[in-house]
Length: 159
Image (tube, rainbow, N blue to C red):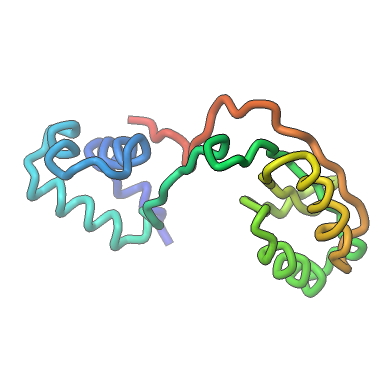
């Protein structure tokens, strides 16, 4: 199956980059930014949405203003990395609201979790009372995030 990327032109890429910078941009501003009149711009946008390339629109919240002051990467090794154990682990951690992302890894660790919570006490509680009690977990290592200097949901597309 050919990738949709092969069917994107420069205008489509400009639309996608503009949406990544500001998903709430008006169609009037978007069309001006990509040098296209409003109707064809909206038609292209709908085509990108309907193709599944644009999966969703979301809101990024300011964690500090919400009292979420601790973020970390938590690396997990399962006691047995089988499909069924992995599925059970993923189901367990999906219920933890502290988990923002869960990624399957190749290498020393089986999973990487990006987590966020109010303070170090909450982080310790998450590790000891929640994650360490997941049956499939053999080992946990964590690294605190001191400052996030770049945050993107997708790479910037080359034009």
